Figure: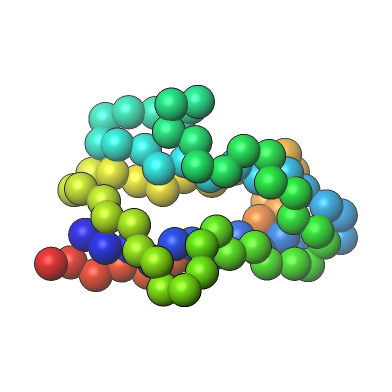
Amino acid sequence: FPVTIPTLTNITAGNVLANVYVVPSGDTAGNTNVTLLQIEIASLDTYQIYQGGEKLLLNNGDTIQANANGASSITTVCSYTTI
């Protein structure tokens, strides 16, 4: 299914480093599926991975996963549609 590329928002008062992974079904997040590695997001700023309406196609069970070096420091939003 097509997914719009997510945005990451740093909701804290300090800069954070974030990672984003596109993980195939049954796999785990790691070096083989990282799409962003240690991207620095400034305090109260939003980072959009791609622009211009680009889409990512995922199979059933695939996931987009994100983490950061600060607990509860980022929020993320993406949308999807099924075909």
